[in-house]
Amino acid sequence: MALSADIADKLRTAIETRGEAVIAVSGGSTPKRLFEALSNEALDWSRVTVTLVDERWVPDTDERSNARLVESLLLQHKAADAEFMPLYVEAATPEAGIAEVRARVGSMTQPFDVVVLGMGPDGHTASFFPGGDRLGEALDLSNTALVLPMRAPGAGEPRITFTLRELLKAQTLYLHIQGDDKRVVLDQAEQPDSQLPIASVLRHARQLDIYWCP
Image (cartoon, rainbow, N blue to C red; front, side, top):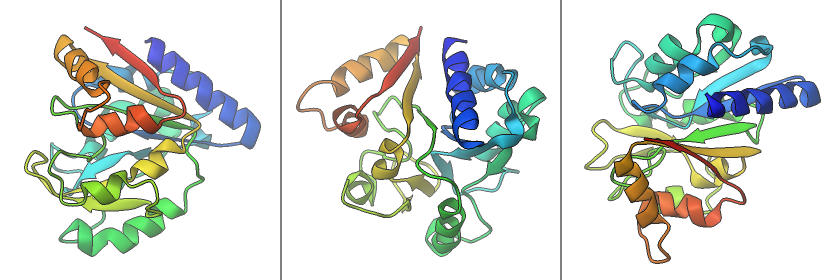
């Protein structure tokens, strides 16, 4: 509830300042209650664009689709008027669809007003998975690509993900985690020699607001 209220405040400020707001959210199981709370926040959702930090390369008819999660839990109630910008396009692979995705995300106002990251038990965030085939590119702050394909042993499906450089540009960057197990992983990531992907966010973010609950 606290994170939902804070995000809503940031979106209202952006709308008052620029007439619009853009938020990128994460998928998985952790944000479900956040999405439900945020969908009921009172603000001019017709001026908000919602996109994803990353996506599994599956259509929104697939139960593992992050877009499906956003559509069913966030784009409801007061937030039903928001515009949604999915990352998946109808192509066989993320590599085949990357040009279309880059054109799509390039049309959005950037930097994003709000980015909400999650974290897996393996220390991944977005689709920055340990052992990812393009992990180095995704974490390289000199890489100007907006999005990249990603394949990794722990990722399941092929993925599409915003790069670290783009996510760090956000006006407000959140890390939203839940459970004692993830608190342990976060503690590990905060060690100076940590190789966990989330550690790159902790090291390079100019400001990172972390929300955790048991």
